[in-house]
Image (cartoon, rainbow, N blue to C red; front, side):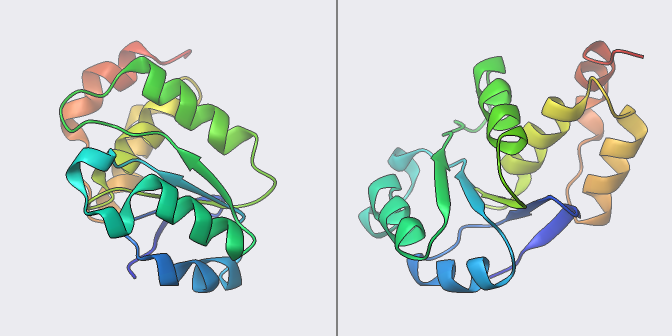
Length: 141
């Protein structure tokens, strides 16, 4: 498992396994967000299996499937709500962690400068420079 903490309250990871949830809970996370659509993963890792495993480990589970290359503002809004309503740190996962990073950056764009969002993601291996126009358009500053 490769957890990359973008902030103290939000981390991303490539695909996790059902047996990882105990370690995720032990690491202090309270909510897990699944950003992978079931159509791109085997039955052993689909939403229903992952949700059951997360809840058995005492974690909250949110499904917010993001289709690669087809992210919507509904996805961004759902991610923002899942982050802001969590009682503690959140771990979001997808195939590589990139979609989860993109959702986070777009959700935070109104309040955090684009340079900071892009820089944070870059320090963890995610290149969001191509999102700069969207991040700046969403900025409240």
